[in-house]
Each structure stands twice: as structure tokens, then as C-alpha cells.
Image (cartoon, rainbow, N blue to C red; front, side, top):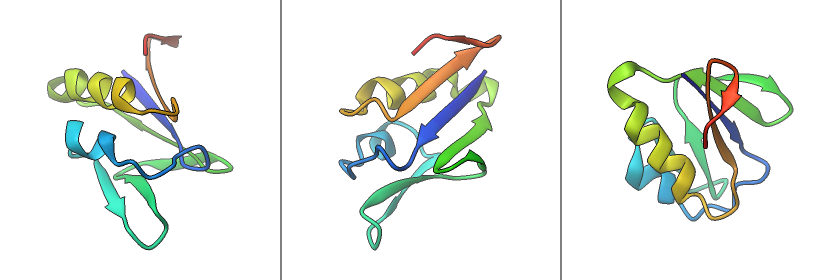
Length: 79
């Protein structure tokens, strides 16, 4: 399972931070940060989701009010 986070779309509500500890607050930028991720393209950050964090990653994606987070399983978007 893989997660993609569009930092440019993020509006800094930080609901993802409450759902999964892989997201952290960047108060200076007013946006969340996806820890241990790599920038895939301009402001799109990706990382693998550990097996024990799959539910948390899905909750983080569903909690985002601007759909800046997407979760993929076997290449198919599931959230």
C-alpha cells in the first residue's frame, strides 16, 4: 500500500495529523508534512504504508477536507 500527499493542495487543517502519526504539523508553512516520504513530483510526496498503519493511512486520507491525500493498493486508488 502506498500513500500520496499533495502538499500544494493542503490547507493546514491538520486533520491527517490526528489520524496518523506519519503526518506532522509544519506551523511555519501552515501545512502538514508526510514523514519518511520522497517528493515524486512538484509538491507530491509518496511513501509506502506499513502493514500495521494501513487503517490509519486510510483515515488520514478520508479526514482531509481538500482531498490532498490518496491511498493506493496494487496501483489502484482506494481512498
